Image (tube, rainbow, N blue to C red; front, side, top):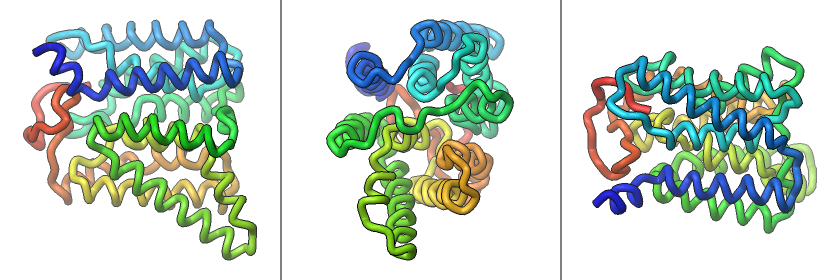
Length: 278
C-alpha cells in the first residue's frame, strides 16, 4: 500500500525529472552550476522545511516539496555568493508557511525566492539561455515535463500558458514582419520550459478549478509578454507569475474548486482545508 501511495504522488516523478535535468545540465551541457551552491540550497531547504513544520505543528516532516523547490532553484538561480544561495532556499521554504490564504501558500516558493533575490541583489540572476535552443533539447524537456504534469493532473495550466504565450510571440512576429524562426527560437528556451512545466503548474499555488487555472495561465502569459516585449525587461514569465499570484485567492473565491492533495491527485477534498499543507 505504501508503494502504491508513493506512485500516486507526482512529486516522486518531479524529483526524478528535475534530477535528470540537473544531471544533463551539469555533465552534458556544463552550464556552470557551483556544487557548493547546490549543496547549500538543498541542505538549507530541508532544514527550513523541518523547522517550519515543527513551528507550524505539522504531524510529520515531509522533505519532498522542499527537495523539488531546491532542485528548481539549483537549475535556475545563478550566483557566485553561497550566502545568497542559502538565502534563496530559506526565503523559498519560509514563504510557504508565512504567506497563506485559505490553507494555500500564495507564491510558488522557487519563484518567490528568485524574484526577491533579483530585486534585492545584483549578484543573483536567472540564466535564461542555459539549456540552449536546439529543437531536440526543447522537445526532450517538454516530454519530461508533460510526464510530470500528467501525474500531477495540472496539464491544462502549462498548455494554456504555452499556447497563449506562443500565440502572442507569433502574433508579434507577424505584426513586425519578422520571420517565424524568431518566435520558434524564443519558445525553444530551457528556462521558459522549466518555468512552464515545473513552476506555473505548481498545483499548490494555482487555482483550484480547471477553468480558473486556464484563466490564470492566460493572465500570466499576457503579463509576461508585456514585461518582456513592451517594457523590455528580462525574465518576463518569472516576474509575471509573482505579480499574478495574489489573484489566485480571488479566482478561487469566484470559481469554486477542490484543494490539491499530493498523495492523491484524484481525490476530491474540501475547498477549505484545516491546518497547514505544504
